[in-house]
Length: 329
Ligand SMILES: NC(=O)c1ccc[n+]([C@@H]2O[C@H](COP(=O)([O-])OP(=O)(O)OC[C@H]3O[C@@H](n4cnc5c(N)ncnc54)[C@H](O)[C@@H]3O)[C@@H](O)[C@H]2O)c1
Ligand SMILES: O=C(O)C[C@H](O)C(=O)O
Image (cartoon, rainbow, N blue to C red; front, side, top):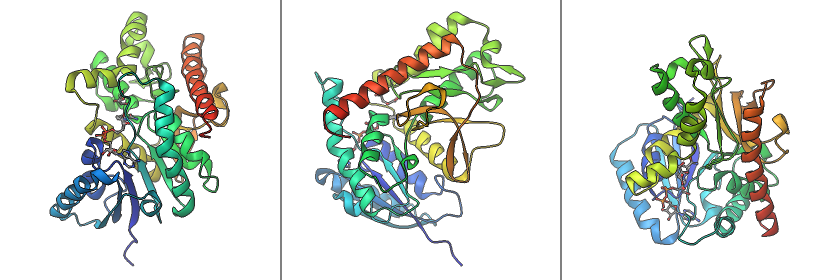
């Protein structure tokens, strides 16, 4: 019997990440070459026409796996029956806006989207939040979807993970495929901590292979953590194709599993592991088994790493306290 299509909802579909993402979903890169998909696109009313234009182009690709495209400006409709939800659309930071203002503005988006997911998404719904501030937006959406298992709400740090892989590979003159078990900890923000102490590179650790504390501290960590800002500075717009690529990687691995002998990074609800307060949606070393993320356990965390993990987790706790005060969770 032919496989039933998977309903994939993408918010912010007419934006720049949406444009880089939708064609890859429709071509089978998100879920696999045998899985048909139906796209459900959500946009604000002013951007629906642009989303229609993208849908016309999707049609013009004649993707064999694409079984339909529906466009909505209503979250309840867009998430109805959804199996995978990519929450990309978000309110960008405007000039003079404080972090709290940004969190409040995004609360107006992610609260109703969480409610809509709760009301109508399929039982197996998996949510990836890309729109910034991604971790706390995921927390807001999750708080308004009490009937959905909490662990189905995740936020994207895979772009940071991929950035760190390439920076380390370039430093060592190796291929990214030679590097395993790298980790991004904490928030998708400038406080994130890319950890190469447990990374494996051709029989040694990433840190030992580098053997250059100054590079690690003053170059690698800030380069990865501030890469988003560097892209904005260079392009005049935030990362789009690389962000879409990371979203594909995250959901692909979540659904299909991570390779044996490696792990990846994803922001998932903490179970208290590594001293991260339970419930915070924080980035961890993770594997995916049987369609669910699991935090890799038992890693030794030295003082250098501890300080950096704690700083990023503290930022997440502060963001959670802000949205709590605003009544968003
Ligand atoms: N987590 C990450 O690694 C990462 C990486 C890159 C970008 N981002 C973030 O992703 C988000 C999207 O980036 P972009 O470059 O595509 O932005 P963009 O401005 O090009 O597109 C955003 C789209 O979202 C739409 N939108 C706004 N509110 C909406 C709502 N309530 N419902 C549905 N759609 C809505 C807008 O109309 C717009 O088309 C931003 O918040 C950006 O900072 C995250
Ligand atoms: O850094 C940003 O503001 C954009 C995005 O989150 C990124 O990491 O590229």
